[in-house]
Structure formats: structure tokens, C-alpha cells
Image (cartoon, rainbow, N blue to C red; front, side, top):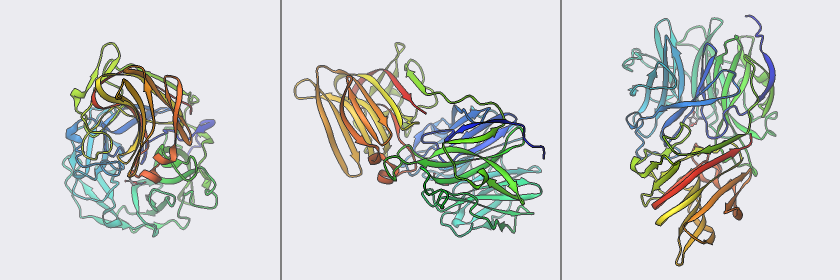
Length: 495
Ligand code: 6LW
């Protein structure tokens, strides 16, 4: 194969920071698309596009209609698990599992920005389904009974056309998952992750001359993990759940998830999407020359890439919000009014975030850097409770809000950490309006009322290790009860 003539540069990892786990990538010509899992959020499964592999723009969400995404009973550990994106014969496919409603399904589109079809439900269960197309046939793999299993399906109806064939259980690590099949130099490769999505996460691979097996395990397995001597000191941990792809210049790459730790062995931003180069040696894929991932890596990209710039976003809510904005479950539309004057008016439901089965009134986006700042000017209309939130799970969030006091109004900083609900600060304010902002400072947050610091919080208290879930923190305006106006929302982050 020709040696790739690319652009030597420094790659900044993660390529898609913040809560963007379980990445899958497809290359179509010089365009690259990544999808990620979304759990109990609506809309679900973000789609990112890039032409340089460094800078990724969210161009939509695959599941943007309630009919595609039943979320009843879902929480930050349920709902939509790992998606796979593939392209065949002019059609994009996204296959995933809704673990709280219906199991495995796929949707199709002629453009990854959408619209995507209604779900086609699939018979073979197990999580992390993937597709492989060859010679007019469509194969599906997933992991029922902790065994990677292959069947042929009719992609139009989802009907299974061949009985499930057990291919591999992995090398003996727990949770063999995230299977993908590829063809290279006459071999079929079966890429897996084992060890679970935490510290022991690892990527393993097997190969066969026949798609149905038998598959031989790579003697060098695991081919990638930070749960090793080389990786133990890295701040990046949990590396796994990879998907290989070949770029337009012939070079091979892998996207995978990993998380970065803050304030000890804690991560609150969620599992993020990382990129690494792949080479082939002795008929096996080698990831990043066997070296651990780093936040800055010397690589040869297929196209010149701009260095990512810090983001300063100034949201005026004067129309439908962009694709980065999400809700917990399906929103009650009438509770969100996007004014022509850029003012967002939210109406509370009386239910807050400590609630599993209903959508609280909140507009949330991923916190994509540990160093960031966000906030809004909030005005209550009468007896309301509203402000800004950092949300991880229904048992892990921090609210900074205004409410009516016995006399006048007050600003409150309230933490929910597992079973503890705690008011860290209660500060009188002169009227129903105040500027509320939160600064993320890596291992802690600072809460700022009208320009003055009033409280702080360890970000570890909102970490996955403490409050669970498969997600990462999201931030934004919310209203618990009554009505409140938000005069624009600012979000700034350092990379
Ligand atoms: C996902 C599984 C995993 O389905 O975590 O890290 C699960 N890997 O493959 C949820 O994200």
C-alpha cells in the first residue's frame, strides 16, 4: 500500500471532549462522521463531522423524534448505549441499543445530518451492535450472553437471515463488548473491548479467513490499554471501546473512549472521544505504536488541521436551540419559550432533577472542558425557582438558583450528592433578578452571584465514581417551579 503523504502536526486529544462516549467513526471520501451514545438525553446520538480529524462540528442528532427514542424509565445508566455508524451504497446506517425500550434497532439516512428513518427493530440482542456489509450482504454482531455473535440480516426489515453464530468470547476479560468486523488483506478482524468501561478497559482483536470463524486471538492481546505499566501514570484512563477506519489517504486510525481525571481518581466530564493512528504489523493492527495516548500527540493527518481555539459562545435563545442542547427525557414543549428578543422563558413542572421518570424543565449542553465558565441573568416572575445547573445524574447535581425568601429574594447554592441534599449558601438578593454564573476550575467549581464568589464545590462530588451513570456533566438553565426569564446564556471554555 502507498505510504500516506499527510501533514505532520500535533493532534489535540480528546478530539471530541466532554460527555461523548462509545465513539464510532465512518469515512466517506474526505468526510468523517462520528456518533456517540446518549443514554437518557433527548435528542439522542450526536453526529459530528470533520474533514481534518482534529476539528469536529456537531451537525445534528440521529434520534430527534420521540417516535425513534422511547425513554420511559431511562436514567444516566440506561437508554441509548453504544451506536455504530456505517455507510453502504449511498445510505448511512446507525445501529444501537435502547436498553430501556426495545433493545437493538437501526435507522438509516441519505445524509448523516438527517433526517433519519424510524427504527427498524432487530431480533438479535446483546449490547453494542455493529454492522458489516460485503457482497450485497449485511451482517450484524453484538454480544448476547457475553459472546460476540454474528448473524446476517435484511437491512430493510431487520429480519435475521441466518442463525446467530458465536464467534469469540474475547481473551477472558469481563464484559466482552463493542465488537466491530473489518476486512484487511484477506483477513476478517474482530475488534473488541474487555474489562468494562473503567480502569481495566482494554482493546483486543482476533482474525479469521472466514467471516463465520474460527477466529484466532492476537498473541499480543490486549493491543491497547492504559491499565498497564506504560499507561498507569497517564491522567487519561479507561481507554477502550474502539472503532477502526481508513482515511482518504489510506492511513488507518482508531477512535476510542477514555476519561481524564481531576482531583484524584475522579472524572466528572464523562468519557470522551480520542483519536490514535493505527499501523499494521505481521497482519495485526498496532495502535499508536503501542504507546499510551496523550493530550498532545505528533501524528500525520490526512489533511491540514487548524489548532482548536478556545470557545466563547454567547447563546441568544431567539429560535430553536442548536443541536448541542438537550433535555433529560422528552421535553414538555410548552415549558420552553424562545422569545424573538433572545429571552428564554422557562416554566417549571414542580419536579426537579432528583426524579427518575419525568423531564425537568432544563436546557443542557455538555461541559467540554474542565476549565470553563457559564451563566445567565435570571429573572423570576413571581413565586418561582430557577437558575443554572451542573447535572451528572439524578443523584448528582449542583443547582445555583433564585427563589422567594420570607422577605424579598435569595440566591441558593444547593448540592445533591447521592442521598445528601445540602444548601451550601443562601444569599439575600435585592430583587427577582441576578447574574448567576459558575466557573469550572478543574478539580472544583466556583459559584458567582452578581460578580462575587459565594460558594465552591469539589468536582469529584459530581464525578462518575461518586454519583454513577455512563454520562458526563451537562450545564444550562433550568426552572423548577413558576416562570423565569433567562437573558442570554454565556459558555466559555479553554481547550
Ligand atoms: C457501552 C459499552 C461500554 O455500551 O459502556 O465502554 C456501555 N463501553 O460498550 C455504555 O456506554
